[in-house]
Length: 309
Image 1 (cartoon, rainbow, N blue to C red):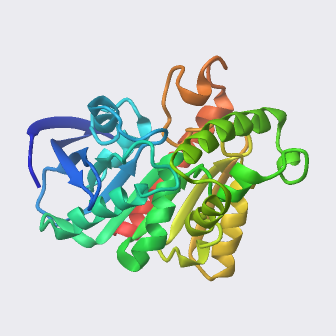
Image 2 (image 1 turned 90 degrees about the vertical axis):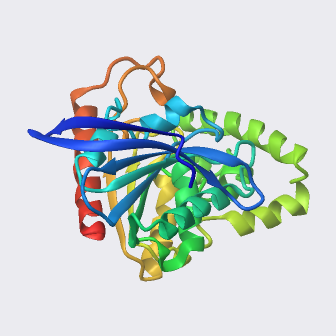
Image 3 (image 1 turned 180 degrees about the vertical axis):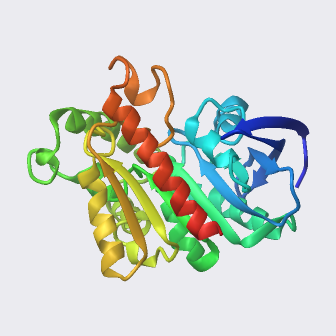
């Protein structure tokens, strides 16, 4: 692992000063690009548990986005919370333009990099991710078997690609979603199908890839305990869209915990302030939304503390 830069930072959390070091690094996936990554490391003796964070949206992000998902000086309350615990944090990227492709290979490469590093405990590795990152965390969970201690998936996107890409919007279950959610899904669907078609994924090839990459169909193969954070008010990933995956995991006897909130928009699990993503043009957060974000952080922290103890 090549260290590009290191910076010591002091952080006050809950009245205690915690010294941490931020390292810039990179993940090399087999047959894929070299992707930038950031560590936040406790100022204590290891080997440490590790929380791998995965951003949402498109892959190939710049350094500022990746650092924000690890740095103790992050503006994200959830990242600050993670830095208040004696865990290492690794923020990772994934290749752009590869939806339903080999993106999970990048996450698995990061997992392998952590396992081989003597500073970390290979039996105590968790993933915290949301949206597209949550999608990749679950796909990596299917592949990793018992190589993960646990997964936190906030509003994981496209758990059922067939539903997202092919389901008739005039019929249930799509027609039962909020109109705003249907509108967002159809807009995203058109763009995504065009991109997949350019990569040669259409017709039977697309159907085969959907079968292969469907989290819902392979939910029983996720062996790591998993916490889902979902919201009824989420337009991009409504709670009802994720619930069939949760049901399949439970039916397979997997360890599943769920926090379902009512008022929060997509991305609530990070606690980000300002107009960003789903919050563009919707005005300030309500008291109920702030309370749900705080509940999500508390639930996440408790879950991680149990699986990384």
